[in-house]
Length: 95
Image (cartoon, rainbow, N blue to C red; front, side):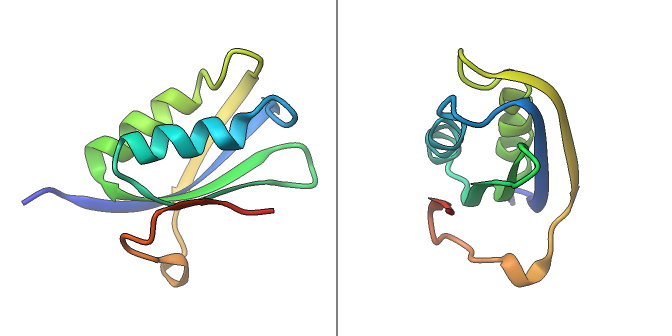
């Protein structure tokens, strides 16, 4: 049985206006993850991600690089709010 995990992620740096959310959505869907990604008023990008632990770890690693135009300063992870769980509901971009 594959271990399942859910986490919150915050990415800082030059990550808005560079296609970061769409890029994150595409990577998450390729990995079979579900959750959401959104821009935050402070210029960071926040995501809630759920799925197999290995795939979640792969996404976190990929977020450290981001799309070509991004300049990632840091990727922070933390526990996910269980209330955000939408198992298998796809991966959405929130406005």
